[in-house]
Length: 223
Ligand SMILES: [Ca+2]
Image (cartoon, rainbow, N blue to C red; front, side):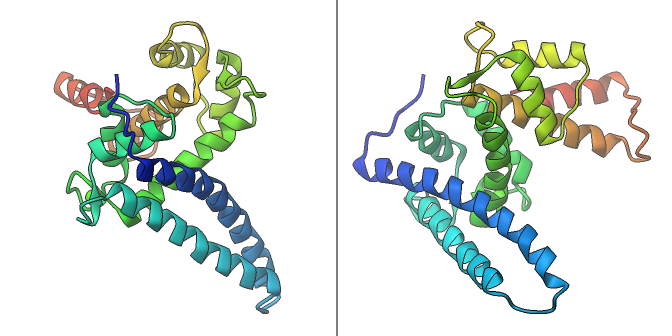
C-alpha cells in the first residue's frame, strides 16, 4: 500500500522521531512544573532543566524535520510525511496525512513548515500517550478502550457517533484499532470538531446547515 523508504538514513530518521516523541511529552510535563514554580518568582534548577530539555527537544524535532525535508525547502509535503510515518511503521492513506497537514497549515500553503510540524507533533503525542496507556502491550485497542482513550484526549461522543466512527476507522474490520487506525480516527474527530466550531459561532453546541454546507462539511472531513 505504501512506498516504504528503505534508505538507511531514513531509518535513522525513524529512531530520531521515536526519541522525539518521548522527549516532547517531557517538555509538556515540565511546562506544568514551570507554572507551579512561577509563583515563587525564582528561576529554579527545575526550570533551568526544563528550558534545556525544551531546547534539546526542539533540536531533535528539527533534525527529524530536516531529514524528511530532504530538498531543504523548509516545508514537507504530504508524500514526504507519509513516507516518514511508514518508516516508523505507521501506515496512513495519503488523504489522512493531507488532513494532518490541513489541520495545522496556518499559512495555508498546503505543506508543513517546522513550526506547523511542532504543533502536529504535540497532537500526535497526546493521541499516542492515550493509546499507550490502554493498549496493555497488545498493540491495539478494542472499542471500549478506544472510547476511554478518546475521553482522555477530550472527545466524548455518544454511542451512535462513537461506534460509527470506530467501525469506519477499523481498517481490518476485526474490532481492533492499531495505533495508526486510532491516530486517523482522532485526526478525523479533531477535524470534525474544528469544522463544527467554525459553524457554531454562538457556541450553542448546535448548528444548522443547508445542503451545500452539509456537502462542504462532509467532504472537508472525509479521509
Ligand atoms: Ca504550511
